[in-house]
Length: 121
Image 1 (tube, rainbow, N blue to C red):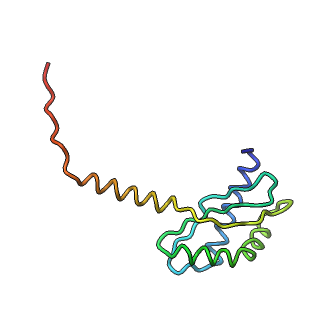
Image 2: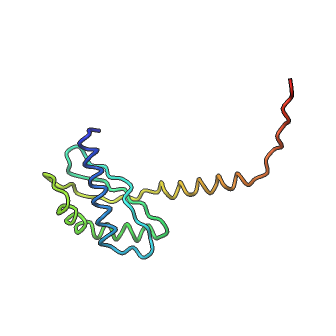
Image 3: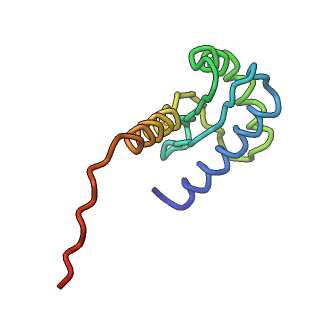
C-alpha cells in the first residue's frame, strides 16, 4: 500500500469517527471506527466499525441508513478530488479479543501441576 493511501485511510478513519461520535446517539453503545480501506482509485472505502455493549445489527442498520449524510459531512471536512463511497462493515475483532482474555483468565484459575524441585549439582 502506498504512503498516500495509508494517509488517506487514517484521515478518513479520524474524520468518520469524529462524525459518528459527535453527530449520532448510540443508546449506550460504544461505536468506533477501527479502520478504513480505500481502493486504489479512491472510489470506494470499507469502513470497519467496532460495537461494544450494544446491538450490532441495530448500529449497522443505522449506519447504512445514514450513509449518505455521513458521507456529506465527511466530504465537507476532507478535501479530496473525489470522496470515496463509504460502505460500513462490522469489525468483531474487539469482541473476540475480550473473549480470548476471559478464556485466558479462566485457564489461569485452573489447578496447576506442582513444580518439581530443582536438583542441586
